[in-house]
Image (cartoon, rainbow, N blue to C red; front, side):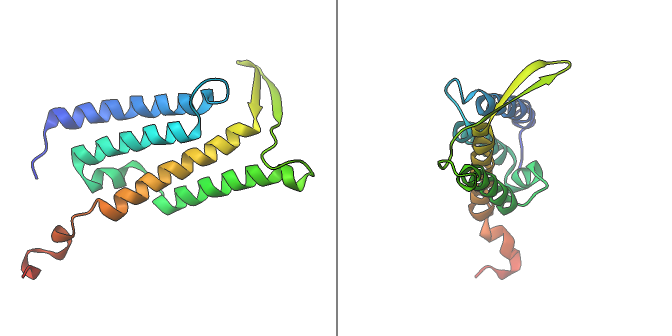
Length: 149
């Protein structure tokens, strides 16, 4: 398969910009539209661009972790974040806020919703990677030339 240089370069540049925007949506999702699901879907679109430009090898190059590991980590983070208030005698997914005074940044407020959204973000990214892993390979190429009927 012949690849176009302009497509490769464009996708590599756009890919990183889309990742930055997805992280922004993840962090801004508590006060504005966005959140873990929307940010994860944007990463999924970026992964689809990499797949269209270079195939399954480009998708596998994106992360050194297995897709099911990313999905499992996201599910674990979201589940633990939802269950911690329950263990402390509060309602499921009850929010809490922590405030830190950082020297270079100033006052930073972090909510428990950020941890939950981060879990959802990882879960969606892991799911997208698993879909490309499952359906992105061409079985005709895996069998080799000599085994075709």
